Image (tube, rainbow, N blue to C red; front, side):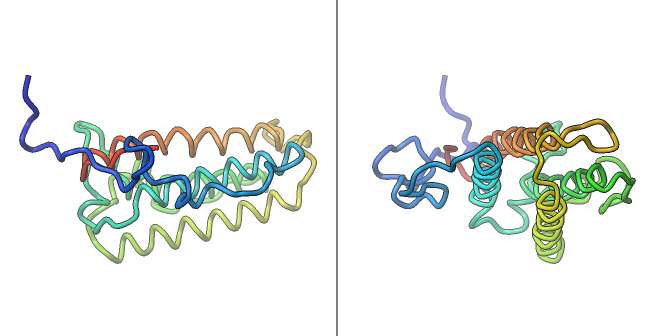
Length: 187
C-alpha cells in the first residue's frame, strides 16, 4: 500500500540515530553531570525535561503550522497544547492556594478552540505559559514538604507527579502532531 501524497515525509535533524529528534550532543535536555539527588530535585528535573520537549516540538513552525489540527476530528494542535498547559498550570496554582482561579481562556476547551493561526495568539500563548509556569513553580517552592496536603486533599508529591504526567502525555501528542505537520519524528 503506497503513502498518501498529502502526508509529509518523515525527517529528523539527528545524524547519530536517524529515528531521533536531534543528536544527543545537541539535546538541551541532556547534561554531562550526574542525575539529581533526592526526590524533589528528581521530580523537578523530569518536569523540566518535558517542558523543554514541548518547546522543541513547536520550534521552527509558523502560526498556521502551530494551530493546525492535524488529527481530525480532534481540536488538538501544538498551539492548543501550549495554551492548555498554561491553563492547567493556573489550575494547579488554584489547588496550591486553595481557591478557584478564573480560566485564562474562558469556557471549557477554549484553550484548544481559540488556538488560531495568528502571531499575536502564538506570542500570547507562550507568554501565558511562561508566566503560569513561573507562578506555579514559585507557589510550590514555598511548600517543599512533598507530604504536605493541600486543601483539596492532594499531596504536593501527587501534584508534582501529576504535572510530570500531564506534560509527558501531551509531549506524546506533540510528537504525533508535529510529525503530521511537517514529518519531523519524535524522540
